[in-house]
Length: 238
Image (cartoon, rainbow, N blue to C red; front, side, top):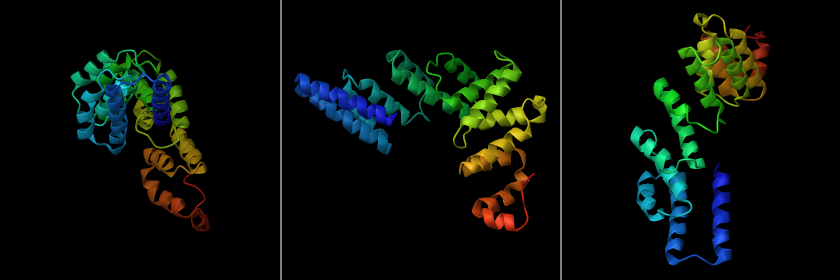
């Protein structure tokens, strides 16, 4: 995403330079956008709040507004989010912030707010958000069948490169015996094995803890030295 932002900024700057239509005020606005981007990378909330008024009306105003709100999303009030969604309705930045907000709502287990915001989510390109949505469907009894939810969660979880909260949470709920066996412990073992083969230890550890927390000491041995682990005669966890 950052590469896309930089490309967009470069194209806009190049367009202004070629057309030779920049006013002194616009030049100051360009400088403020660049400064805001640097402040965003540094997580400097105070600097972003100071710069935001300076880019009002700039073609990249929505980006600066996004950066400013994104850096303090954990403490932002719901009304601030709604104001942003209204002001920048239909833009990429609107839905990008909605994606970030949905992830935070999922981490907070605020399923009612998640469901209300997910209804307006357009891009639908985040697997973790999708897993949260499937879990909400499972917990609320719709709109997807329990079997369809389980199959999609299994697919999305297998595609996640590293450990995450959304897909792992959904998988753990569906592996729980109270789910009626919609997912099996073997699904977690398959996830752990595939992750180990790909060198993704955090994802493997997460899957092992889900179904066999007592195996964590052996897993740590395997993680530290596969050769030593095998020479001890321990062939596998199962």
